Picture 1 (cartoon, rainbow, N blue to C red):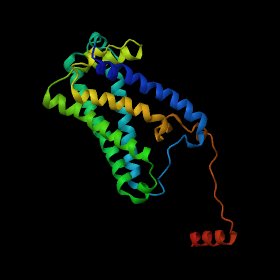
Picture 2 (picture 1 turned 90 degrees about the vertical axis):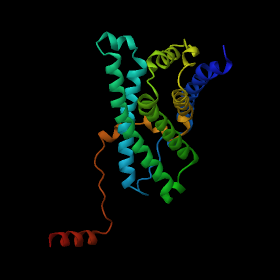
Picture 3 (picture 1 turned 135 degrees about the vertical axis):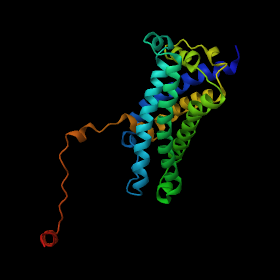
Picture 4 (picture 1 turned 30 degrees about the vertical axis):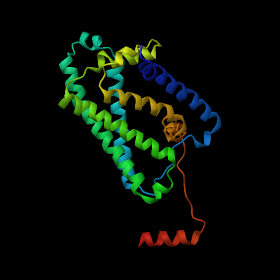
Length: 239
């Protein structure tokens, strides 16, 4: 068996997943104060709002589509009456919409990080790296979903890439399944595992931190130290 085929489709994915798990454990035990995404909202708010909403909504849709397409065997969908044509059409339509939303969001966020001076100056190398890798990954996904399938020729990843991934997850990977996979599908897969590898050392760790205590926290009240100013403000409001 070709060494590089074995490396890219067995060794590299497991290496990235190992770094993903061990890296999270290490960072949680050594850098809990940094276990968050640094907020830059006070530096620029308008584009952040739209970019963040579009990106997060889109990426959830994309992840949902990937989980269904990669983890559910083709035979199962056919058994419930979903033909290849129906699945292919829904994947292109639904995946295309989700991809466009995600692409728009990451484009706004990347433009903001590069174009807004205050945001750019406070961005770390890892911040820029994550934004660029996500942008490249999303662009390749868009090309695979729309460009390749619509203009180059259909590719049924559920017969090659999906069985390979399921085999990887149960520790029975078959790298020969990836030999005939089109180049950009391979690159899209490798970039995804690379993102998993750098995940623990970037702002992406904030994905695992949901502030549950905020749901029961009392409203924060701000009071002025100057009582006279407060009274004058209230009098002006009454007028």
